[in-house]
Structure formats: structure tokens, C-alpha cells
Image 1: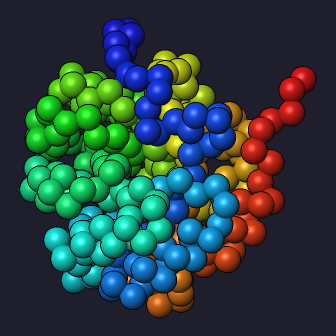
Image 2: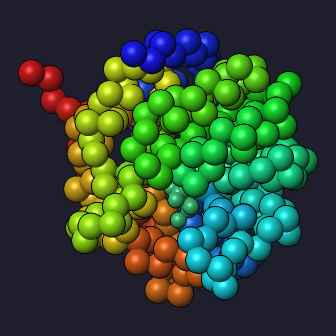
Length: 268
Ligand code: PEP
Ligand code: MN
């Protein structure tokens, strides 16, 4: 038996909407250019209910020789998004340098990606780089279905003094030809909520589905399971996206999708 996780988080955190509505995070898989970042942000700003704008600045690609992100210059585009739209901005951090650069740029929320959560050394490095800040951090599940590894990453951040921590369920790698890019294994989300009820759990239907067609049923299932929010990859022109093109939606289609989701499971 693993010890019960001891987590000390704020109940009033930037990752929980005060009115009880689900936290909605949207934005491109990757920041590609200033024009793409700004056009996507203005499209998203026009949709009611989006709380946080996401964009990957450093991209952990499975194979080399693909687009690996624009790096530090992209951070000033996110600053501009914040200034022009008032949306809070989030990016992925995978080492201490990413943390320092993001803090310097005034990034509001950071997330730890699925390929980073698997590595306790890297998670500890990130936790140490964040020590002394109170920045909200979201921890994606590791690529493999290991709940203890996921919880361990959260504990490392918490023990470094962070009190605004959330988790993202983005599914688990599979060799099989499944309809999903990453298997949702919904019982893992249910078990996570049972073990850590105080941590908001956000679903990432984009990386679970891997295609636009499955996004809505995955998002709806997450809401039916009383998960606390959604992170949905949104691009001004998905057909030319430099990463994850098949799963991104336009801001307009994001709006339609959010409007069609039933957000609270009827009682009884
Ligand atoms: C992403 O959010 O674009 C990403 C790389 O996700 P994950 O770490 O879940 O694969
Ligand atoms: Mn992506």
C-alpha cells in the first residue's frame, strides 16, 4: 500500500473558478508566429467562458527534425496576449531554464507535460526552480498509467511550497490501434479524484482523442465524471498547424463545442 498523499493546497486558487464553473483553457498546441498567436487569442477571447490561454513555447516532440517550438522569443507574444485580451497565459515548462524564463516573462500558469511527469529528477528540478513563488502549476499525467508517479510529481511541487496545483488527465500511451491517440482509462481519473479530491482535475480531450471528431464525446464524458475543467487545443488555422494539426479546432468551432457540452451532470 502506498501512503495516502498529503497535499496542502489552497481552496481558493487561480485554478478554480469562484462561481463553480469549469476552468476552460484553450490555445494552440504551439506558439508558431506572433500573427498566429494573436489571431488565435482574439478568436478565443470572443468565446464566453475561456479562462486561460495556452501555447507551447518549447515543444517535446517524439521524433527529432520536427518543429520544436519557437523558444524564448515566443514568450513576448504571450505577454501581448495578456495585455490585449486580459486572458491569463500558460505554457509548458520542462526544465529550470524554462521556469526562469517564464517567470521573467510574467507567465501566469505553468504546466508540466506528460513526458516530464515521468522523471522525478526533472520534476524536482522544476519544483526547486519554482520554490518561493506561488505560481499555479498544472501537472499532466505521465505517459504511462502510473498514478503514483503522477501523485509523486504533485507532492514534489507541494513540498517546494506551491499551493495552487492542478492536474491534467491527457490519457495514456498505447501501442494498439485504438480510436484514441492516448487511452483515457477513465477509472484512473476517478481514482485520482478519490485520492486527491482537493486537486482540481482538468481533462485534455485534445491529446486523448488525437482527432477533432472524438473531441466532443471525450469532453462530455469528462464533464459527466465531474472533472473540473477542460484544456482544448485551438488554432486559428488548424490545417497548417506545425504540431498536432489533426486535433486542433478553430476558435469558432471551440465556441460551438463549448456551447453544446452539458456542463453539470443532472442530479439523481
Ligand atoms: C501539449 O499540451 O501540447 C503536449 C505536448 O501535451 P502532452 O504533454 O500531454 O503530450
Ligand atoms: Mn499538443
